[in-house]
Image 1: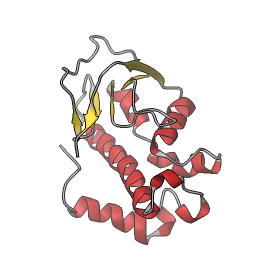
Image 2: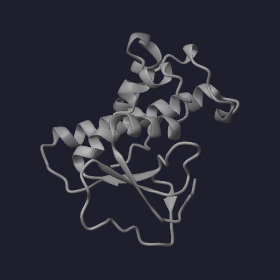
Image 3: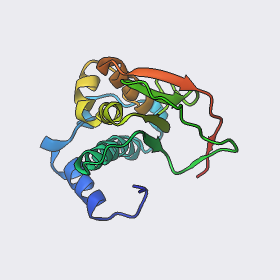
Image 4: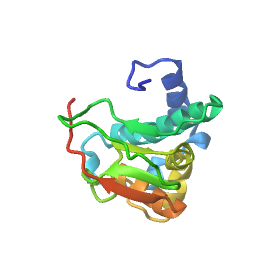
Length: 168
């Protein structure tokens, strides 16, 4: 299932929560300095960042609600292209997330990752903690927030080589 779709009811719910009901917003942007790297339209970039973390959380909730036990859960941006086969280690370690060793941008890669179902649930809860991390002066940037979250929750990170690029 891909969440890179037109605005359906799910995305409209996110926009309603995110943009109209400020008491439910995970991160009130006006209280925090947003990096210049977010570019000219910094609001759109902030919204996209929060949308990514929100969608990730909702995916984890869908998995949990399915009552199906998965051996591995993968986060994979649809734009990822590679000439190499993506291989998953035979035995996943508990409390460990596996992330390619590139595209960290001062934090940790947020484009591709995999782990067991329990660990991936923890990995997917950045959205719930955005304000807490921002209040502790974490640089408000997706990769930096993800690294802070993994450090804070004690999830181990195993890096692996997987050359790829984003094709948009």
